[in-house]
Image (cartoon, rainbow, N blue to C red; front, top):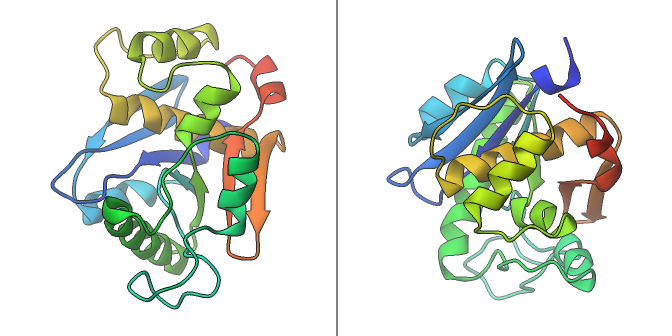
Length: 198
């Protein structure tokens, strides 16, 4: 099995009522789509050893829950911020729901023997000077890497899931940026990873 066959990328929504994007590689082709329910995400994840999720998977040290008063940033968040990457803190409004869902899914995956990692598509786009919401530019970047993708319109959720998948591939190749602290790690694909074409 190749590195990229072992990875599932998930752009997780805060609610099952909203679309969560997914991306994975199989037999020379990248499969991209959307799911809604936790059970469907878990079912898809059964076929992979590593899942890279665009959602916070931990809370700041010093907090036992998101409901109590405490620090708003994790050490990994502060590392991102020092390098100029923008993000929403896990304690901010809608991020609370996303964080709770991400942590719950990560726990279920762990119980199944599947490793889950937090990633941030926006940081990957920033690394390559790509506008975070410019879907045409993002898609051109992917095609420039040699990714075989269907010729159709893609939602932002789907494109972000591909970014999650790419960061996962970079991680397994040992060429990802890792922002780590005592209360979490965020994995982002690095420049040297993309000398490899798919």
